[in-house]
Length: 92
Image (cartoon, rainbow, N blue to C red; front, side):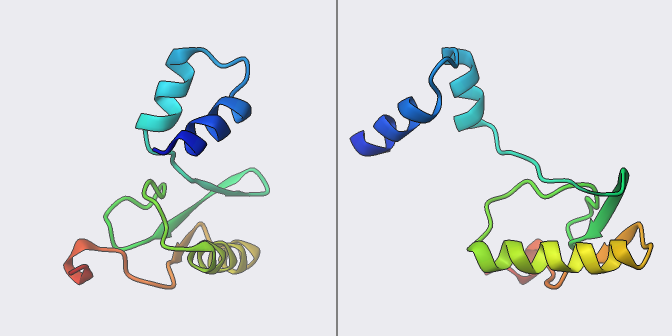
């Protein structure tokens, strides 16, 4: 991290303990989807249909996933197929 990154982190985490900041920085966040109080699972090709816990390439990738989940949930589906296969067999 650069000095500027630390300054931004300090401004955005005012009142956080050192432990809180360590968790935010070192643990990857998980993203889960809910629609009308119902958990919507997404088949990403990873074997874990409950959550996304990696950094996405860009905003558009996130938007594509959210739109896919929303369309499926609106149709009453509790499991939707991701717009892209995220399994490791397709990563080089």
